[in-house]
Length: 330
Image (cartoon, rainbow, N blue to C red; front, top):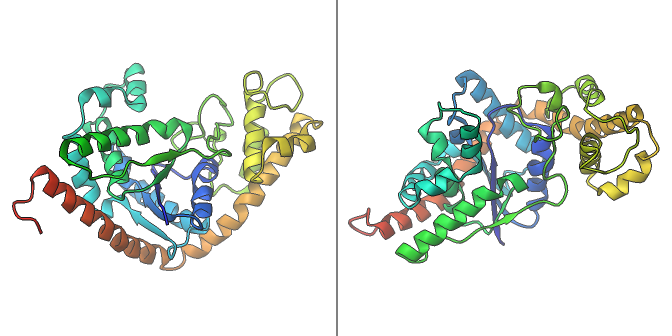
């Protein structure tokens, strides 16, 4: 069985976009792949996080993973910081990477363009840690959104360089971009991705939002003055985004949902979208409440840590020997 790896950085509450773009796919992939899924908490602290809030975000993320259908018996689920091989391999890979590569990373360039000068070294070098997150498990595939594809590409570049320099060591992973729901945009600004770090909460549907909150947010979603429901991302980005959300919530194509809503006014259309979101999230929210009242979170992370360490430690030992860090091969 081929291996697939992915993770989410829970620097805030998980969103509908996180679920439609990643979590639901993880659940479906369990039947086809050996899944390795981690909570990228080390990446969270590349910018300051309130410790109390971060702990809650981490707990909620794991609980929502499980509530969404990830099965600890079929997937390895763990905290990134619990497997120290990630950080150790990250430093070794940093020593096999170049400043030019880091300077070309989109997130770094965006921050610099905006004049943000108080960036941490951890933020600058996060691509090498992300490469370690991937390469330490030798996955065949890494599911990512279109905007995250660059992270897999630099991991591939570093792996190929290391393999050529020291002899074959890492498997070269392939990015896998979902066809539906890969990128859900903000309700208040459809030019931007729906993000858990977005400052305007009204543009973000959180996985734990109450139905009344969801209805209010969808009702205030940005549309246009054309008055017709059509999938035209260029001229009607707000409506196109709502259609994408509706199709993704129902796990079907936009062509399949369009006949149902194309003759509705915008208010009626938004009600259909809100109903679809609520129908999708309510069972997950109910399961979440059950999970947080048990010891399933702690048990899942402990068992996941042991399974992940068993894989990662073998790879790190091999890497350490290849670069000459071990005096005696163990």
